Length: 429
Ligand code: FA5
Ligand code: MG
Image (cartoon, rainbow, N blue to C red; front, side, top):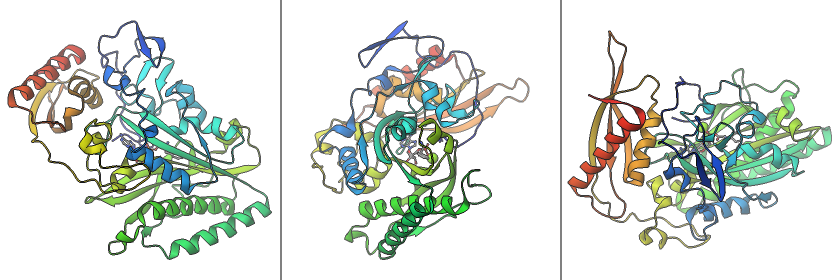
């Protein structure tokens, strides 16, 4: 589970996860020297030029337009290149030096000084610095993550930010605005469970007054509840109100922080992270005397709910049976075309000392691409005497375009096995 908030065990290890890499890579027309940190794979690099959020009629483009029309008085900023420095992605947002998000097991590096941004928040400082007091920015983001229906190593986020004056008059105006928004939302067909605006585990920042922080948190939640009403509050939902819940979260660059989950296909799906912007971010952006909020929407997750898209891989398909179901700026319900049969194969091996599950997932993606529908760990074992770790992974193969024959699946499994041995140095059991 990759989240920028979570803290988990980080495996530090020598260069193992990348394919034997050339000494330079051509990325978006730039030639980039590789080094011992390089772990981007060809499968990932092939996605950089695609820019799905700009393709008219694509559900992600329609969703972006809907969000932009909801926040109509926000400046829409175009996404800079996804190639950023670790300082831009982490340091300017006050990530601690040992944050797990920095690890090569979690993020894609082109080399030691250049990486693929892991979130759209990377551009907070420059966006606030452009003297925008309200802005939106859509970006492709990249993370080494698990493989299933709602996780993909490339996805899209829409970041939004807004700042307010901290003088009494500005806060009074904000209070009025909050009240007006609240009245509209009270009549909405959405069932929303709130979280406290702040708590001992989700504190107000030193330097913020509790009153101002509460007003800004409330403004953030009301603005996003208004967006959810716009997106999901259609008449068809009246019988079965959409269930939304706010939960406390933790990000290095906001406090207090919140996430939103929506009940979808029998489970809670996280659709966004947000919070009161860290004052050091606004200081770096040279925005004095202001307090602000920011959010980051997971566009695929929201589009999956809005258009009833059951599998995140579908956003990348070239199948006309997918694209013909959508028209620009219209929400329609996706009717799944016949699913081709799935085939599962298990593979058990001894892991190298520093091998991370994400290394295994990247090998699978790189060797078989989107035909990998799902990869789960069935079993783990640590040898009581030697301490060696082994694991069994189950890979589910399914093409979205055609039926796979058994021999093809076995051949793919064989290539995955050989690449695991060659690239990660694992030993089959
Ligand atoms: C962030 O990325 C923060 N930058 C959000 C934020 C912005 C916080 C501004 C505070 C202020 P998080 O890691 O939770 O947070 O990701 C945000 C959303 O992206 C998630 O809620 C989810 O909807 C989506 N997301 C995360 N990982 C994936 C993935 N692998 N595939 C698809 N969507 C994902
Ligand atoms: Mg999260």
